[in-house]
Length: 77
Image (cartoon, rainbow, N blue to C red; front, side, top):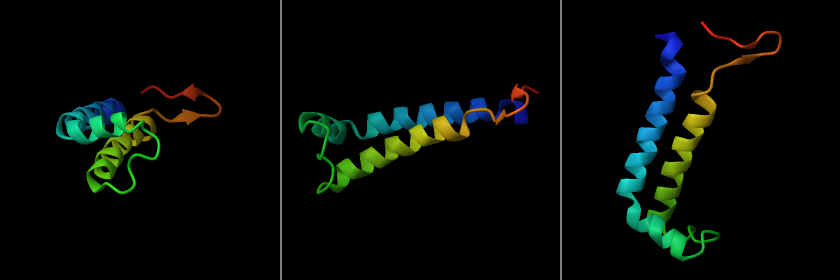
């Protein structure tokens, strides 16, 4: 199971973000229409959509990647 934990977390993050895009389609469209920058602050629905997708991205990039050891490169079991 440990061999596949990174891949499973990456898959979980992708599913998480797919659900987020489907659930928060309207607030994400509002963010895009507002230009993206400084378009989240006063709106709680936009902030929720933003942080939902950011958390999925963080899960994908930090928990889903295999550990890198300084001496041996990427450890594969």
